[in-house]
Every structure is written in structure tokens, then in C-alpha cells.
Image (cartoon, one colour):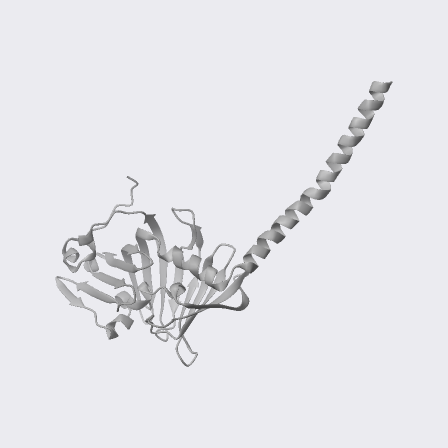
Length: 281
């Protein structure tokens, strides 16, 4: 009889423990979610910008993408991008892979620290031309993305602040405003970025002139996980530089930690460029 009473007490205690777990597990989950939300709210503008900047200055990488320029007519290009980006310097080579009649056209862009952006373009059959400061505002391969836009990292500017929140594509975003500091060059007065702070992904970017007019808008499309586990936009739509025109960029391949030679980032390399392999060594 004593054993039966003990077993009954044990079963009763076990039942109470089970009920407590059922009651408190959702509460624990709720407190965890609240904690995550508080952490997201506590992310400062400078912290947010620093994380986004680190995502851009991510070392060496190789990119394959499709560029569609839409206006009076449509132009479609398949591009390859070789890039080396750090906090102190940027080197990028854009090369046309397709269509066949334009294959080989290339652009080299280089910037170190606060120095002026430098670049060269290669047009068929064998002409190399240096880009001056005014030409840096022209469209890359005739697109709505300028040469300067391709290199500029406004997340690294000195002045970063949050303006509030807004929902973009059913996602609540923090609006990050970036302004260049002393010695930081830009053709834009300020830039606003709608950031999904949970995934640390920009969903919209607007660039403004000194009069407060939007001079360029970049909208993110598909968000995917890249080869190093980050959430990144796989497609972008760029507009605003020219009335009635827009440019769509659709990424297809991305590979980090690629070994490049110094010679690959010189105008001399234009004459022997070819499509790079994305195979894992």
C-alpha cells in the first residue's frame, strides 16, 4: 500500500511538472522573441551602418550577373565582376561576356582611401581610355548605375542616423540616413537606406541632392543566402538617373575568397580577359 501511495505521489508530481512545462514553454519562447526584438531595437545607426559596410568590404569575390537596361529599347548584357574590397581600398573589373559582339568590353575602377576614384574603359577592338572625374557620373555600360555608384560605400561615411521606421514589402525597416563627413567624396548630399535589421539587408536605397530631390532609387528583389551564409539581394532595380529608364540586375553566381593576381586589375589585362571559373578548388 505504501508503495502504491508513493507511486501515486510520483505520478501526481510528474503530471504537475508536465503541465508546468506546457504552460511555461510558450512563455519562455515569448520572452526569447521579445529579447530578440529588443536587441534589434537597440542596434544603433552606427552599428547598423558598420555591419552593412563590412558586408561590402568582404575581400575578394567573383560575380556573374545579367544586366537589363530598359528605356526606348532594351539592352541585355551578361557580366562578370572581379573585385577586391577592403575598408581602405577597392578594385573592380566589369567585363561583358555576352552578347558575342560586345564580349570583352571592360571597365576597371580603383580607389584607395579618400583619394579620387580612378578608372579605365576598354572598347572593341582594342581601345583603352582613362575616365575623368566628370565621366565617373556616366552610366556603367549605358546603365542607370554610374561608375562612381559601383564603388561608393556610403555605409562607411562618418554621419549615420536612424530617421524612423517604414514597412517595405511587408517588412518593418529602419530608415538609415548616411551623410559624408569631412574629406569623404560623393556626388550625393545624403543617402537613405530602408534596412531589414533582422536580416541586415537593404530593401530600398534612395540618393538625394542638396535640394532634397531623389536622384536615384535602388529596390531589392529576391533575397537569398550567399556562399558564406549571409542574406543578400539577388536582384536589384535601379532608376532615377534618367527619366523613362531603369536597370535590372540579376545575380546568378557569387564566389568569395578568390585568388586574383595584381595584373588582373590593370588596363593591360583587358587584352586577355576571359570568363573565370566558379568551380570550387
